[in-house]
Image (cartoon, rainbow, N blue to C red; front, side, top):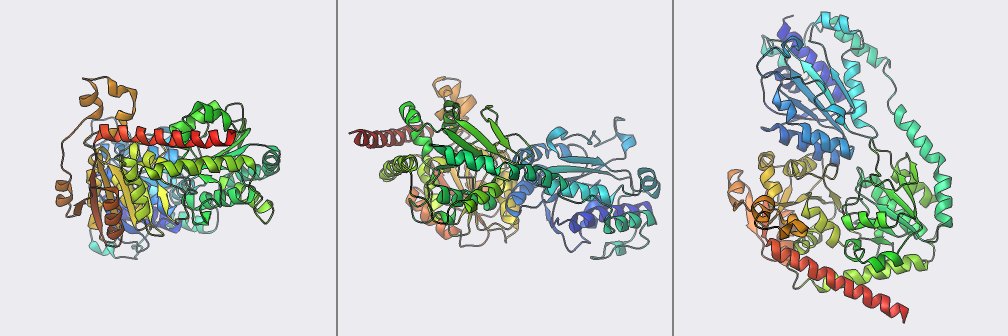
Length: 611
């Protein structure tokens, strides 16, 4: 067997082990050193292969895929800076507990630090952002013998288990290859084949795994969740004795698990829920008729009022998920620091950066809340005055917001129109920066059976286009991406994935010619530096980007036009872009006008109750 054939068998063993662990998707970025992995992927029918010309796009496509599929995609890259380009996506996957497997090809270890072309130190390049990493030996019988009988397939399977979790997250397998990188004969590349003369040591490794020599998956997870169950009784007691309990549901990794559990908990306990749009609870179909469940979403408007914050002060706050999208709600949690705060979380990173939690339950939030709901009485309890107050304020706020609909000149109206246009089973991916904040502030809770996702781990605007495409690739669909112009510009290369006509994606492009979020911050008053360095107008017409990628491109001038356009677009196959043009300063003023109207309406309600 030549070294080229051995390279192929080595690569095939790695990818086959991943496939056996449930990996169904491989994202490939072009390069020479990764040739054995690329050729091997073509021989494995169980794996779907996609090609990305930009490693950053491949990485964020895998993030989106992992969010919707809840299983990891593997990313194959060549050596050098190709690997470094994956770091932003790895960071997002790490902080969001999204499964991902990086398989980076490398030069032989002897070339590191020796001025070899396209060679950097790849082992450890992702630092603490990966759950597991391994620098595999060079493919050879001698390498197998030196590394031990469990060296290759067991390491790969261990990496897959760590990626899948729970909690899920990124892992890194670095795979060096020496030349020749390809076999002498194309016969080795027949789909479904295992190749001839598989090295006996490699076969022995596979057989050892099949005998069950590997560690049983999930043992780490079981220990953490067991501790969570032991504390269910304590949490139930605190909920029963609290006079003003509150549940804050932030962005979660698995909204399909946690969202329904939150809604059931709210219905069966009567505890008010402040539901982030990425919590899975805001648009869960179990909500029933408006007002049935105390699941609230207008808090970003009315929790700005210090007097209302005082009147709504809870004595117990249960928190799940990551930090809320709303900075107003985040500030309220700090204002309510005298309340007992309990975090339920089984993720890889602590979710309490303000240091407010007195109790931290290492458990699955969805499962804990489901058990608490099951333990409550069969019929929903009468709504207590505490919950009734929250719901009355919420209704007043939405009444004011919707009264403003006709003359609203802000981007929140376009976010709300996009949500209204979604059919059952659709996914909205809200970009970081203003889009996700607008969905948070203007997306009214309703039994919609739609899923809202976003990259709120590191909350960057990089990779949004590719993440949206990856969601569609992971099985979500149709998918609508609500994205700003800077975010689209940042990841225009991700539009190349639209070559796959089976990906049903509609991008709603909110184009305000710059960074609109900075107009919401005090820095807006610091001209002449503000406009060129923060607002950063670019003057680009994204119609040309659509034409380059052969995508349908239309404009919508009003929220009603956008709603009609999105409703039609999601029924069509393929990918397209719908643009709405807004003005940054008018957007800010209109937001403030709506918030003022909400404040007046809520104060009128409070004054009526006092009299």
